Length: 140
Ligand SMILES: *[C@@H]1O[C@H](CO)[C@@H](O)[C@H](O)[C@H]1NC(C)=O
Image 1: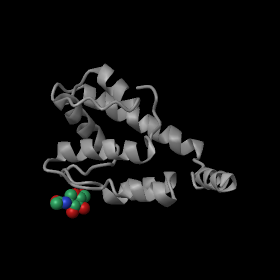
Image 2: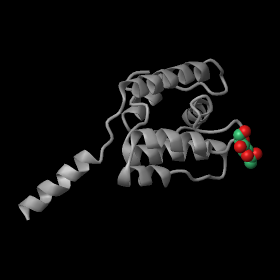
Image 3: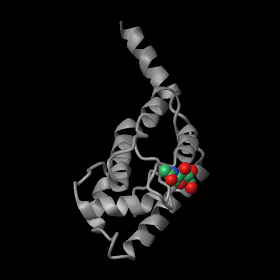
Image 4: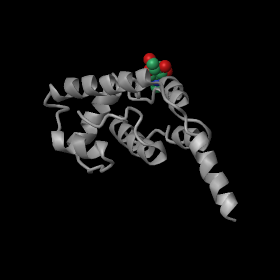
């Protein structure tokens, strides 16, 4: 029994992809750039505190934050400008970051909701639950 546990844990560690540092840095920069851009318009501006919380996994249900995340999702190639999910780009990124069950859970997050803002918001939340943040940005 104990041996089985060790085996399962070892498998879980092995199945976690080793990320290239360039990819993490590239995505961290893309996050910061998109965040800055979307803070410049009153339409999509949000409280810095809410974004900080979000990066720590606390998703405050706030309309302005949701608009902000949708705004960011376009330059980050998570969503198209027409409000649909950028499936091609996300699949490429997911493949870079995940494999196995984690990859499947991330792919299951690609679902359209009633509005583009809801779609972006639910996608970010789901992705976080599935596998943690893509960009691993811990500072904005
Ligand atoms: C939205 O835009 C993307 C990229 O330009 C395109 O591939 C897709 O077909 C468009 N979807 C709709 C519903 O217009």
